[in-house]
Image (cartoon, rainbow, N blue to C red; front, side, top):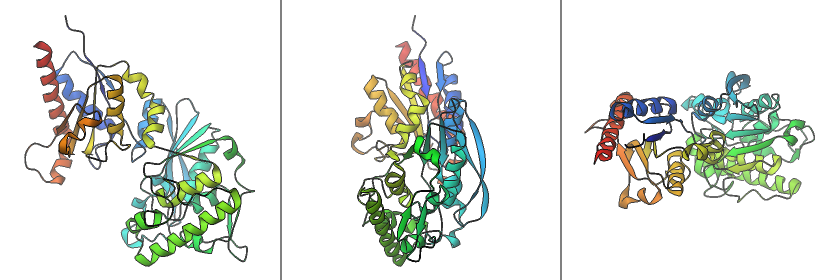
Length: 383
């Protein structure tokens, strides 16, 4: 008699279609049709991108909290953050307070947009007396080197006349001195970890301004100004802390906030999937299953470089577990993805279909593909 197969269903979000929890439910429903006796463990995943907050809170029994903050344009909004079930960790998505989606395209100008609201979310989290804070920095609207967030936390940045610098990237150009005496005292006893999945340095042709500035509304002139400002920030941090952040891999992420947090607050820069997977205790779960099923909207050559499904595939290979992945779009030239732990990959799209139609039908398509794969597994188990 064959043992009941144990399957971990752990997809990432299918961007603009399904969040990770919805994707997990669709896959599980399809598997139950094709493998009615399978034992399924649902564990939606995230890697520091959109939806990280909900995934962590749902899977740790935590709670969503809200705080009044300023958005990138200085307008008052309410933004969410999370506290894990054990009350030891706060999870903050920068995009909730300082995200590009909060700024209309016509008003996107990184000389003016500020990360102040992200600092306000960190302040709110500190009131819970957590031991650590995970800051997911994807989707930001800013290239202010984190000055705004640090100002909210009590840091003071002054111009040549000793007056506070302006909000936004303009403040970098005015910066003459940094004063940390009024930083919130709880920061010294709270681990701050930045979920950072890019390796761009702070300045230069691959730096925060050059690579990410245009995405946030920067003109070529603005890019040069912002790069100069970030170079000034790095110089001032080096003078104060004797730390050179200008060429540190990842220091240019989210407009340089990762670099300033590293240099001034002692934050650590870590891959988002590493931080989130540790909270979800994924390695412990993997030791209880026979098969991993994952997926996200697109799987390609970037997936093994820190994306959730790619990290799962590597863990699966390490533990000798097969890994099946679903996606709307798959690029696996030369079997590249198979070399990184994926046993099999399936596009959920059925025949010619435009992108919008595929997104609208993604739930059905994902469930149907999961059912077909489950039926294939059922057949092979009978052979």
